Image 1: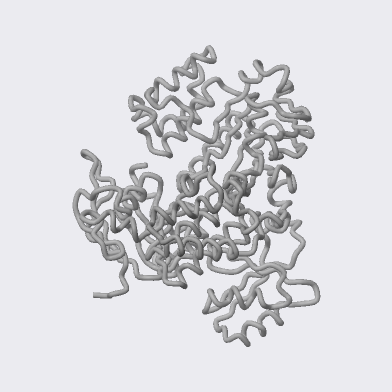
Image 2: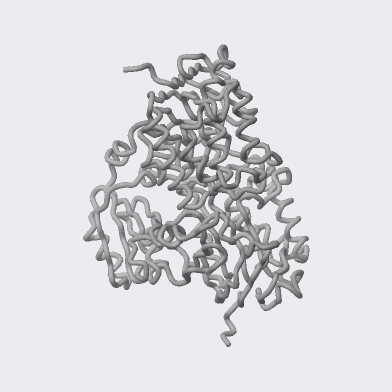
Length: 246
Length: 311
């Protein structure tokens, strides 16, 4: 047993009628790791992620996240993770500080903590002058960075990022990854999906799902060696071409 | 040469305080794939909606197939196939019903223009009785393309057709576009936030903040990159990023997959760079002069004032 394992998945399966969306997947993720969760559309990534976040009950198999069982203790799982997706991250019609207060409240942070961390975060992001601005009025790049900071505002053990950089300009996309590095260096585990294959290179380990199965899981360097491929894009193509659904 | 199929001249659009288009001009030649490449909020959707006659510009003029977008909007709609960014087919109609609906709307039949969609439709034909809302992302995208083609348009306006789509499906989608261009001579104006897709276009406009940074062939854009660009790797990549940024000769340092792309200021060279990082304790140092990609070019041309917020 390794005490540093914060996500443990064993034979996790989800079936909708006859359709096996996630088929007996198993893997571990260690504390502070940046874990890339890749796959073609329809491979089962979203379904697997929803189970890990305690939002969907597995048909069979087990998973513990931050030490809690996703099936029996979903509320404790939710309290110990952060989540950000491209589709939902912030309330557009609340101000920057209102968003922070709302999320801090949801995660049961004390008023004092919320106040303290809000000041700290606004300074870090250079957003102090914009603190009373509606989130809607911020440039997209700022929003994405704010959304990530918000997802880890309550210092979760793990943060789930679902295509966090879609549609973002190239410079902001790189700054965003530098924020991910810093969070990982602080010990926060990062579980991330992306369709940008250069971003797969930034992960410590990468898993690739095809038709509900995990077909490959290793460091980017090892995967490239195994598939005799120059880039992660080629690794992905080699694997995803085997897919029959999607 | 024929008249360009799309002509955009000094088009402006403002939403309250946001200037979505700050006077842009471009032309799409007959039979080419023209890409609008840029992040969200660059103005791509506004321009496509103006050309699709769904939005009025505040200023400037635009024509599609020689017709004015303001005056001749009804005739333009017969000649364009528009695929909006959000899936906009009828979710509770089947695949076949959607296709029949769009064919009927344009006074034609599926059979009449079957040759145009055959290559694409064969991927989804086995699901023709499935409701559109129940299709996977890749299938929805193929159906939407079929519906945009069923009235045999002269030009396709595609708003981010590959956003959120995995690399394999994206590759397939581009192969379909090539066929439409090469076999059927359809002109295509397509927007995308994926910089790598720029290389698949005949010409592109790099778009940011309501402006075109440049318009040219992707090859011309990358080859006119003026800075001295180097790829750098070492055994300690996390530490290398900070060490590179602290070197006075480094102009910009950005991560690019498994390496960093560094531009070197005038008066400095790569040997100085090598000794700087060697002094900081790096081993297995690889430094190599490289050609710019579209993404390098975009970052060099772009206005970094908004993007470069200190973290």
